Length: 203
Image (tube, rainbow, N blue to C red):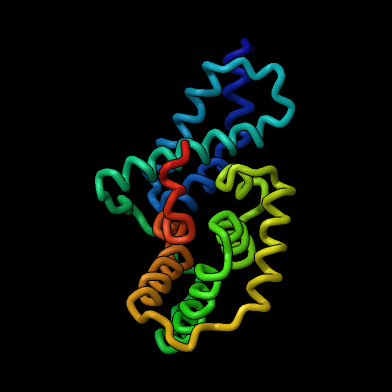
């Protein structure tokens, strides 16, 4: 096995994880595959002999590629290209979902009004969607430990913040739609942009 084959084998060990990261951010299977392929191209052209944690390095690369794609998509006013939808894990009760949507909308408005963008991202992605801090870290451009601290600080601030009694209905609807798109189908693009509008400018 030559060096390239060895590198390809190591990359394949991380492929499923990288695709999951990309899909969470982009909400498009096709674009997620493109992001993973671009990560492989960058890996094959980079001297990684000094990289101690290849999985972490690749996660960072994929996250940066996804942010580039989100930036490009926003510039083109392009919606996510959903070529397939993940299978439903359970039957959705419309009445129950409406109740959850209302409570989530108000809670998310508190998050948006109380927290800084990086805190919003760390808190929502980890506490609401269970995204690991090593995946959140490259999105907020921090170390995993710093991302953990952001979420912890955000948690304390949100718990002590009162909900607004005069919520903007249109704004709440946008929040709910973004949240449901992420929770139903894994489309995190709108949610990421909502939590941090400047995220599309990072590369």
